Figure 1 (spheres, rainbow, N blue to C red):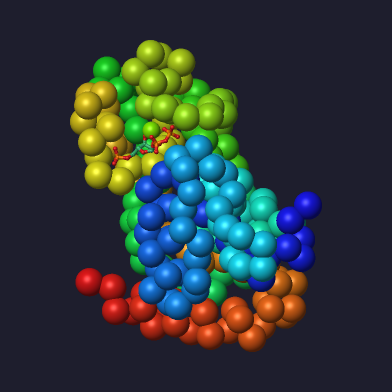
Figure 2: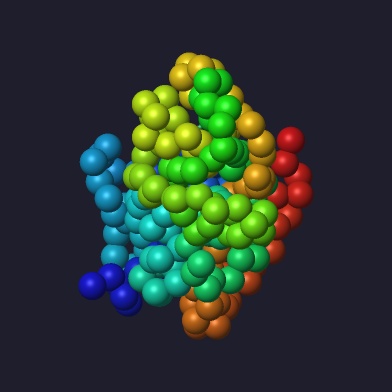
Length: 210
Ligand code: PRP
Ligand code: MG
């Protein structure tokens, strides 16, 4: 059990948002622990701040259920999670988009869509009055369009390098996303003196982004 052993527990997503999230929090004055070895999952010493290194889709879960007090996660993932957390700061980093992607040879109607974002995809389909099977995958989703597992894919595009390498087409941008600072609702009340100034500084720094 982690509760009570640390002054604050921070959930960060491994991958691209980790370094940006870590930096934003340090710049806002939070004393984050040094990062231990490459395979460490939990950084920090008792009595200080702990950092949990999570898959990005798990960050809202840890924050909503109060294991982590705060976290950093893309709002694409937050939307998908359906979790109830306080979302006080748009950090502005990690900008990316959720797009509809197809193989250039796939020109017929869309009957099967593969994605890591099944709830978001279902909502888009509903809004458009479209019907298609949604196939939930765990990663490298572009392969579904390449191999014919699905005739379209909904996935994250950041630089576009993955699409280019795979020779796939970004047919339509469905949503834009940036990294958000999220807070457990109860932690906001219990750790108010620590969190309020942190939120203010994160906001101020986000406005001064280059
Ligand atoms: C993500 C996303 C795309 C890629 C987009 O994959 O799913 O594949 O990044 O970035 P780009 O436009 O800069 O190429 P990632 O490898 O992070 O995770 P995954 O295992 O879920 O595919
Ligand atoms: Mg990928």
